[in-house]
Length: 260
Image (cartoon, rainbow, N blue to C red; front, top):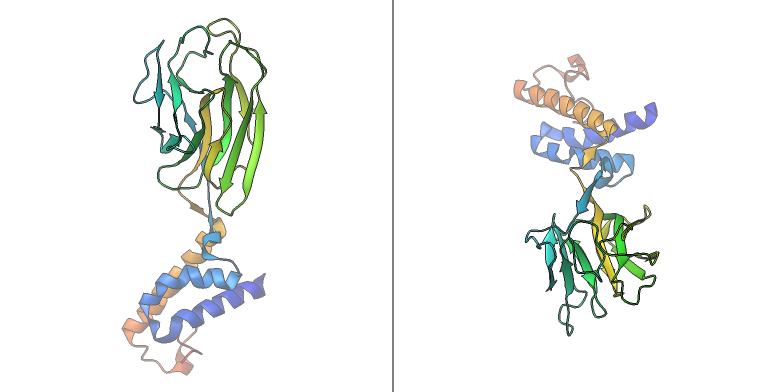
């Protein structure tokens, strides 16, 4: 480890030290990453934080009412039909305490009839993760289990699929729990978009993972901090003119030594 660290510092010093050009300090991180054999982005650790999409608005959907919409935005996520130009493209927004045939969990939610599909993406084009979702059947009319297909498209070209099957139990405003919570595996991360091509479901409380501010690794902070101090010492040496002969300069006082 000591030999590797020495090699890293030597390569970085050789890159920066010639004639003490401060403008090259912006490349410190890149040089350090190259010496470590890793891309610069690997020096940061992305942290994801959960965000719950409740579908409560705005705009607010009043209790006991419903509306067909072609789009809905909440918390930086955009929801649209997979093909917005398809005939009858759209999906339902349901308020709490809906009419008897529909499921109820006390809040607003989305609903897909026999012609509805759903796609959601980040409005800022950031990658996101998919953590969990609450699902229920479409209505108590011809009640049966619903198989809801999710297709996830990752930035690396991988296409993920999973099917969540509801339990077929629903009584609208009655005492039974109409919605079930389904979870997604860790592979459902770094997503560009997610599609639900199957109809006949009700959906609420979608939990996504949104990247927070990248946090540099602790080793990177120490390394860059040390390089910053070294560059400051180098700059002071330049301003002083390095008047001493090379044989009287210590390596700690003049970083030019051995590079001119």
